[in-house]
Length: 640
Ligand code: ADP
Ligand code: MG
Image 1: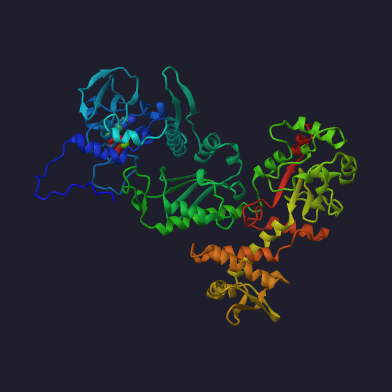
Image 2 (image 1 turned 30 degrees about the horizontal axis):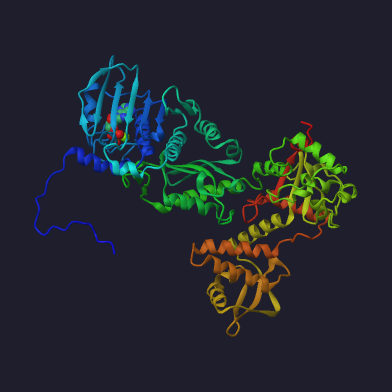
């Protein structure tokens, strides 16, 4: 066993007042965890000073040097020593800690940095003809000296933590610390899209390596923010993001949130702000997850940049030394605003699916790394029996599309005949007899609609529709599943889901655990038209099923629901569990792949998709359709 090393004094020792240097080092422990936290404090100070351009430079992951230069209002020479003393701030007068309009207010950052590194503060106050500098190291202030600086403030922090070797040991590699600095700067650059930022790695001296250059911008917030997010998160994010602007009882939510089909494998693309302050707040992140819950499977994460704006009186930012968490006076309201604001925007997006879907579909048709034109050349050669690896036909099945259907599906007979002797493994599969097309006559009126006019059904699951600008391929099973789900939810909200009574109840044998969980949930199941009760010890009798599902395999449905209940455990709210279960139920009522559809049925499905919110993605966040524009198709054939 490890002995505790805590000192226990058996005699009273005298109490002493710690000196400022010690106090500042203690405070620094909370405020300055790593180089990135120093950068955050310094950039926030520059923003508070009204800067329009901020330059950040660092060396060796910020361990040896951090320098932040701004063009803000500066500090008067007389005030320089005060700026470095503890609890000295120009931002509040201390009378009201619930009325904070600046990033800073605790007056802790500069003295803390001065206690754990060598700090120089050089500044020229607006309207002053001279600049001045003060230095501090290990808590020891040097006298103020004149300096040369045209405007603004330059803070230089060298050898962070040289005075606290224990902390130095906890720092990660230069690369990891540099990455954290980049993250901080990016977050603040999103919070203040009008301000220009540069980030430079000056390790080894010289000009350094420019990592980020964002120009200051003028104009309407949403435009400026959209431009900035394109730079910071990429064109794909912007192309797939919905503009969010919602309000509820004086709380406003602004920003951009991506379509569910643009979801990520982790929560990396979630940036939340409260009154422009970057936060990592559990309440807000939880609300974001809930808003998308209905569209994403549990392992996918939404992408969003959101700012909650409210009267500062309604949120306490003085909860956390680094101010990364906040406390809303009415947390339910903030949460509700995020959930309803996002859901509303997603509903308005209707059937829209992510533009990246078409991109990845096209990508899937090409071998890794090859240019499209080269690829087409190879396809031709392979297609006409040249001695070429047949693998070029086989596309990686990344987009969840039947990739091989791309080329061979277009002319199965010809390709099959030509390829059969070349022993192409990928081909035999797709040339199976199921490749049957249900052709329909063109309908110019329907072609003008977003999802176009159904022209054919391929492989008894893919509806191919013609639009004015290209073509759409719909996964009929995925699309219909979503439609049934949305119908179920609608009926639930209105009068409850209509049920139909089974002539003979279906008896389903299950484990005792499953029976118990199902019976506990029986009142909720009845609300959506699934009526069942106990039947002896290890079985359930299903008496009524949701009418919307038609003829349904009741035993399969009950087993699926039992599995879902077991998976969910006690996690999540009742609403979350209901949604998960409804989504399972919808799957049972949907048109299976393999079912032939008539032209009217296909067109009806397309029209219902257009009219139904969220129909661009299935219940697991995968796309229900892919749109290929003529331009994309031409690109595929090397024509563009
Ligand atoms: P806080 O930001 O909480 O007030 P700091 O220790 O970060 O505390 O800064 C102390 C004071 O120094 C600020 O209140 C501000 O008056 C001044 N100051 C710091 N950095 C700058 C800057 N870049 N431009 C102008 N004034 C600054
Ligand atoms: Mg500050």
